[in-house]
Image (cartoon, rainbow, N blue to C red; front, side, top):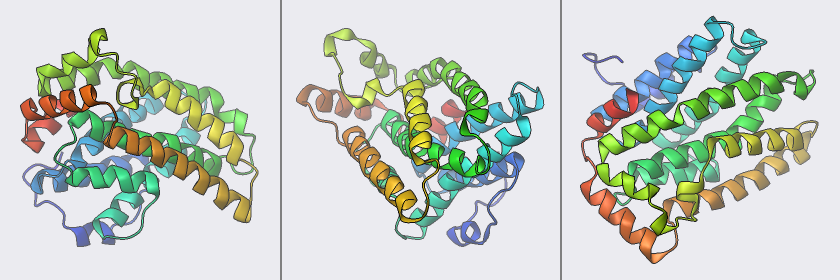
Length: 266
């Protein structure tokens, strides 16, 4: 990261040009991480995870693990820019998609645990943004042409899941409670699956593909409304037992944002 340098301000972010390469995406994410550490903001949790994933995708492109690395980089940039724009809209107090609105509102909610912050970011970004970015990149081409590489990214993310779980346990050993079947967590909080999310994103891309003008916009609005409902169930889950457990976990969770981000970045 950019430790030792002055953290960027809100005005700095608003003056930044959107990335056009995956390297520029990584640099932009590092600025969000620096800003989050300086402002003790939980927004840095998802940004840290996203930075790690993006670095992994970059390595895979360099190692020629995709059928079309150049196209995957374009997808990565298009995809990332939707998050970066959402972040800018949030810090400048402007209207956002409903899915990102709920995710960023949770940043100021001291009742949310780290896992909730991560799931809210993934929920908005994968389930809404990914399908849109894929359709944008594949304009003029057959959508199925990118499916194999799309699935390769899915495999990369799934392989990182165990590492994320290990980081969460370091942040708070009580996270092991989420693995106990006795609690029978049927909530989105623990049923969220990266694979399922990306499968849904692919279906959404196929639904959106070929639509134009108002039909295109209406399809996105309808999708955003559905994903926002899922976001609300993550941010404010139902069930008395689950609520109590989340409060206990939050009580023992590390409160130092920078330290939590260090664990997530390992």
